[in-house]
Length: 291
Image (cartoon, rainbow, N blue to C red; front, top):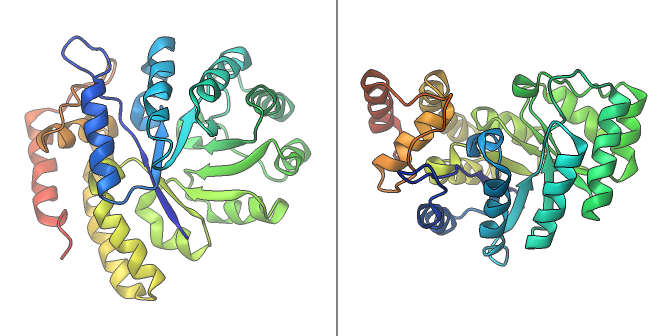
């Protein structure tokens, strides 16, 4: 069965602290819409803008829902020591699934990247989801490199969040190790990812558009491919504006407009201008409802 996981935002209150009440309100709504779980502290959660205490606290809050769905804790950091710290804290909180982006900035070698994931897996006592998002990390997953192939075969990696439009790469990962679960990260191409056999999706827009994508998944599974494609296009009309004007800022604007007080994005992100908010409102009013 394909699963859809919400890449959760991190709500802030007026003082800039995590708004725990708003976070629980959001998760309750998403569960009622059929979410299979949550990806905590990822890109849409403003991960690298959170303090150490805030990242740990978000794991603790997520652990309160682990009996209702699968929880993924993103522990990626620039240093292995930091990532290992977060992995241990997530496990201590009761989170089963550990995820990590590769370390950024220094242009680490494939051997160094592999060592980073092995160390996280050893510290956590479990395999890790490789968060593959080269558009943000500027780090490609070179599946032809011997170190990468050895990592994928080693058992240190049990899943991929493939936020990459290169579907051939996803196929090659599974060819190297068929046991690795592959989750799509670009819901704008859900129909294509599903056709390539991914196990499900981890999506930012699921924060507010989960019913649409649940319906799209049902259409695909029922073999109604043309209807699925049409709904995909409608969703993509929303995603075009969402991404063009700032993912995190738009997510928080939409959720706040829907009555969930998630607050503002953290600087250096900027909030939406009135013009961009109006553009978001217009496309939502036209395409958000399932028709």
